[in-house]
Length: 421
Image 1: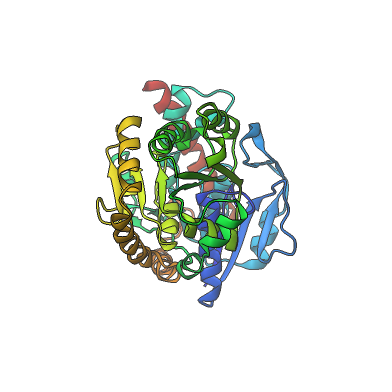
Image 2: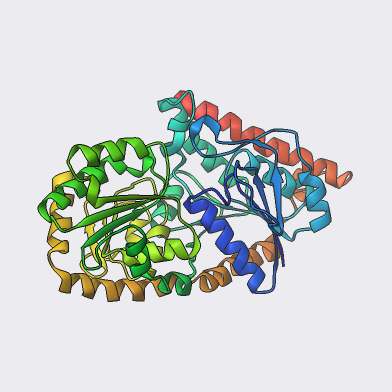
C-alpha cells in the first residue's frame, strides 16, 4: 500500500502530532508499505531524511515553534504524481490539510483525517485570538472531517466529543503507538548522573512542550509545594516553549532552583533515559486528545499522576498505574497526592509494574496494523468523488472542482456557525 501523509508539524518539532506521524510512517515501512510524508520546513534541518517532502514555510510562526506553510509554492502535486498514493491521510484540517483534501478529490482516492487536537485550545497562537476563533476552530475541524472518507480519533473520549459536535462519517478509535522496547531500555542512572540528581532522590518528571495550553504554571505550583514537603525530592522538566522563563522564575522564587532540572528538548536514548529516571510522571494538561506521553512514561516504568481529561483516561487507571485526579482538582489537591505518593515507595513500585504492563497495549506495530485495516476499509468502500457530481466527462477537472466546493463549504460553514453562536 502507498500512503501519503500530510501534516503541519513534523520532526524536528517536538510534540505529540509530530511523534505520531513519525511513528506510524516508520511502522508502515517496517510492515512493508510505502509512506510519503508531506510537511513544512522547520528552522532545524534533518539531513538525508528519506521519503519526506518539505514545503516552503514561515518557520517559528508567532514564536510558537510551529511552521506556517506558504501558499502556492512547492511541488506537492508533482511529488504525488510520482508517488501515486492509494490513500491520503491528513493530520490537520487546515493549511496542508486543504492541500490533502484537494489531492484526494483530484486523484479520486479516499482521504482519512486524524482529529489529533482540540484546536480551540491553540488559538492563543493566533494574533486575533477570541471566542469567535475558538468556535470557528471547532467548526472547521468538524466540517473538514465530514468532507473526508473516515475520521480516526486517538481516544474513545475524543471519539464521543467529535460525534457530539456533528461528525457524521465513520469514526474509528485509533491510538498512536510507541516504541515500547526503546523506552523500556532507558537507563535512568545515566540521566541522573548527567544532571547531578542523587541516585536515591525521589524524582518527579514531566515531558512536553512548555506551553500555555499544557497547564504548566498549575503543575509547577503543585510540584513546588510537594518539593517543599519532601525536601529530598527533585523535579525534572524536559522540553522547551514560551513558558520556560515563567517556570524557572517560579521554582527559583521558592528557593528550589537546586532541586529543579530543565533539560530542554531530548530525543532518542536521551529521552528514554529521562523517562526511566522518573519515580513519578506529573501531568496536568487538559488540551490532549490522547495519552501518548503518558504511555511513553509508562513504558519507562514511570507511574503517572494527572488531571482527568480527553485521552488521559484511556491510559491512566486510578490507583492501578497512577493517580487520576478530577479535572477541576486544585493545586493543593494535586500537591497532596504527589506528596503522599513520594512518601510511599512501595506503592510507587506497584504502580510502576502496572504502568509497564499498560504500555504494552500501545505497541507501535500493533497500532499500525490497526490503522492499515482502516485504510483498507476506506479503499474497498471508496465511492468516487466524481460520481457524486453526476458529471461523467472531464473526470480529473470535475473532481478537482468538487474538492474546491467541499473546501468552500467547510470555510463558509465555519464562519457562519461562529457568527451565529
